[in-house]
Image (tube, rainbow, N blue to C red; front, side, top):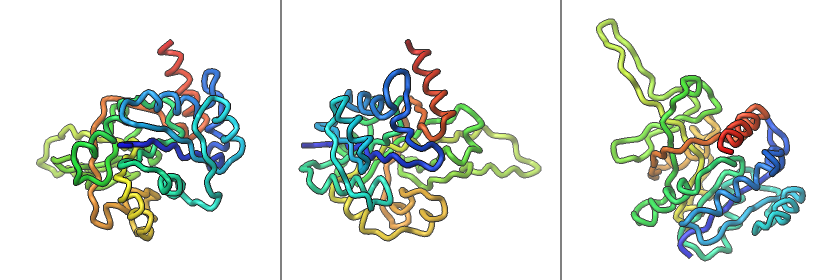
Length: 247
């Protein structure tokens, strides 16, 4: 197989316990994520990976391919690696379970980047920020990248910082938020897991900084699509309004 999508799913959440099973217009959040991911043209299989019986039973109920994983995992990428070890595929796509409004084309974009360029080991997405409040929101991760689309840094802080001198004219700076869908060359996924947590990763609480701090390249692809990650009950209400607006 060329590419397999994996949705790591856990019940616990600091800000919104059990959010993946929360009702979103008649279906649990994770079912929306799974249904949208299933529409991707680039993945040959889609697996939900969980250590929680409640999520397992619900996922089985709506027809997902779901597997149990160890309860010892500290991160979604650890859970991803356990499942990927038994899969014969060139590319593993990590799909965030709390992204019920994701577009299938977003998965196609990240997996397609590695399929086209065999030198890439990892790819992800960004979207130009249009709501100024998101620039200052630490829950919205920002990314800056070079002219070739390689990530320079990810941060919860507003980056880049626009420093104004007395003679400077105000410039319009584009800010980009990171959308947490990742594609990995399968072999690199195990390299990534073997790397110790990095200083920047621990500071920002962002796993992808481990990749940059160890000298690897992350391809960042700009998408025209925006999503809402369900981190709080307020996010759930926003998602409900967006779905109702499309009906």
